[in-house]
Figure 1 (cartoon, rainbow, N blue to C red):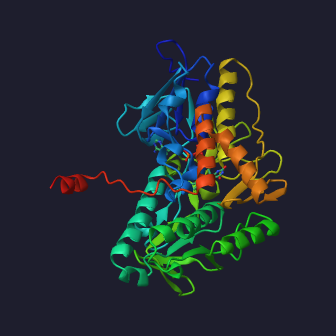
Figure 2: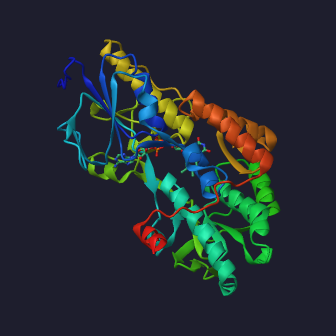
Figure 3: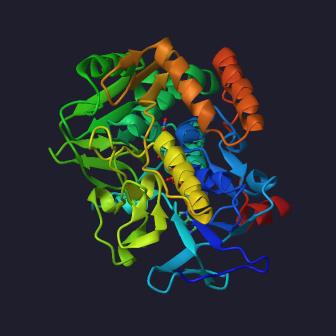
Length: 432
Ligand SMILES: Cc1cc2nc3c(=O)[nH]c(=O)nc-3n(C[C@H](O)[C@H](O)[C@H](O)COP(=O)(O)OP(=O)(O)OC[C@H]3O[C@@H](n4cnc5c(N)ncnc54)[C@H](O)[C@@H]3O)c2cc1C
């Protein structure tokens, strides 16, 4: 092993990506005799499971974005840099960035997550609204609010379908987003915009397969369908989106839907950097890893979280892209490196299944574990809360989340439904 010792003579662990996975790895290296360097293109850690609540004004940005530097305040062996990784050379054991000088490493932890896959749908990269980053959530919220304000000024837009939203994807992201948008549309907007006829603001969920939640048992699927229909979400099953323009969505069947907003919740693929690593990739461009989460032929490189294809030791199946998988795999990689530094052998990764879950609306959630146990309604919502509190990075965040979630549940207020312009044009206009 080549030694990249720092001035204190410690080996360097380079962690790229400060999501659940990267932060989990960094925190488990707190007591190890190493120099930890964490690089993320953002200066905040994103709590993706609640992005849809930012997009629908229920939560403010700070409820899902936490300063990364805060998370290593009590970790003297760690340093953080905000920069974008541009290339990774596994043979030279070197990572290159937009602005930082290249960094070499003794151990590399890849936690760069996934990115949206538009599956080649015409017009999607330009016109669809994905929901994967905090910027995506803020962009979608601003677009929806601006569209309603424009329709309020010019009612002809309403007849053109301006207020209709098509959500693509019948998995957890699509279902949670459609449910939350429906609550915004039917709970708050009728009071904000009393002149808009409710039937002229539709939420449509399009799923290419014949059922919603294909990974869940029929009892959960039926429950989700009913809960969405109760919230007036229109379900279009067995048809896929073929092309998108700013105001129309065309399906493969030829049906044309008038909608000025299309939310993409249909698919992910590994971060684009994985393609240049010279590795054989698994489905969805994920990096296959061994039982200890190390990359084949590169024992000092660990891939964790969404970027990795981790095979579950118990079921033999590739684990889903979930926050719990990301956090646990990141923690495991951190612990493994710490053990190796102490001259101990790393242990194989064992996933503790918390279930796959989704919230459809207030009091309506679903959960299914890998062993097939299911839960729905308020019980599933309580389980959702417990699991997601555990994913939050600090106790302060947990306390704040409890207050935010309880407040939103009790008051139904959508305090975040404002748009704040920061571009030069807006400032120039304000000055004149
Ligand atoms: C809308 C939505 C809802 C979800 N809901 C749930 C849920 O309810 N429950 C659940 O368990 N899971 C949920 N998930 C999945 C869960 O959030 C992910 O599995 C988890 O965030 C993956 O963690 P990660 O650390 O692997 O990647 P990420 O959280 O994506 O972190 C990757 C980090 O890498 C950084 N990065 C990326 N590229 C670069 C680069 N080139 N240079 C530098 N930094 C870079 C990013 O800024 C980011 O901070 C949801 C996901 C989404 C999108």
